Image (cartoon, rainbow, N blue to C red; front, side, top):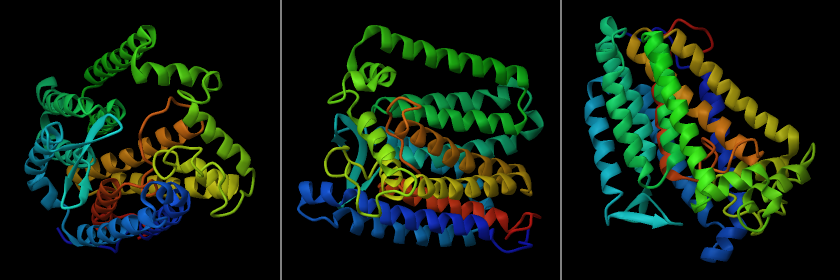
Amino acid sequence: MKANKGIDIPLLTATILLVVVGIIMVFSSSYTYALSNTGDGAHYLRRVLMWAALGTIALTFCSAFPYRIWAKFSNLIMLAALILLVVVLTSAGKEVNYAQRWIEVGGITIMPSELAKAAVIFYMAATMEKNKHRIKTFRYGCVPHLLIGGIVFALVYQQPDFSTGLIIVSIMMIMLFVSGVNMIHFAGLSVMGVGSVVAALGYIFISGQGYKARRLIAYMDPWADPMDAGLQTVQSLLAIGSGGVAGRGIGRSIQKHLYLPEPQNDFIFAIIGEEVGFFGATLVLLLFAIFIWRGACIAMSAPDVFSCLTATGITSMVAIQVIVNVGVATSLLPVTGIPLPFISYGGSALLVMMACTGIMLNISKYTGIQGG
């Protein structure tokens, strides 16, 4: 199959602008924290610039690399992801804040769960295309994905990282729906999944034990414990509220000065709201909306099942993480550690996101939509 058009320019533009915003905001939000913990205010800036450069190489390569190759190697990529998810749970894994989610190699820290997100997308897309004529059957439409999804979720949960596990499962469910599986099967799996999550959250809440229970209780009323369980939520709301319409200005955040823990990570949207205000935060969300819109267009106009489902999975991955991250920052959802795509500090996440965007740009060359 030959490409019939150029890459999707709106998607590429939105991605570049989001990465630029991320670099600026990581530096601004992390300066005091980095100075306090490393003695170097530019510590996170240098690292995010390195990962952005690697991500740019990955995006460029993947946008030029024929997307069909990923279908051929989907099983191998999935196997590599599973091996890394097992390795991170051994002594080779690096523990930070009571969570063992990272592997450090030669001073470079990678997060296997980020690779697992992409691996699951490729694996599902390739498997569904292979079984497209039998997708309505439970054996071929659901069983292979339930098995791999269950294994990935179990391994990620052991880190422990319940929220990332749920996001991976959510991506899988969206891909199942788009693939055209039997709706009775899909409805049954959805009910079982939602019921399991509600039951798990109910047990955590009723037991009142552990940090997960404290997070749920703090979600109900963060101001009841503003110095401990509700600290992040309270400081995030104070940051967003004090930003007003136009913001305090880039670099002028108050909450980043050791009030909001690690503001360059999961709560970077709060610092965006504080420094550039409602207008700036809205523009950031508009860039994400453009990314999601173009991703949906690429998926709907994709030339085959694999490319359609791959674009669907990548777009869903970005959309879900944006919804969860912004929901947490604005106290619409309980506190959980999900980064804001392209913007939050995190090398593995940025590299995977940019590589996946490159794959979507390659797919866009084979579509019939306008805008590339």
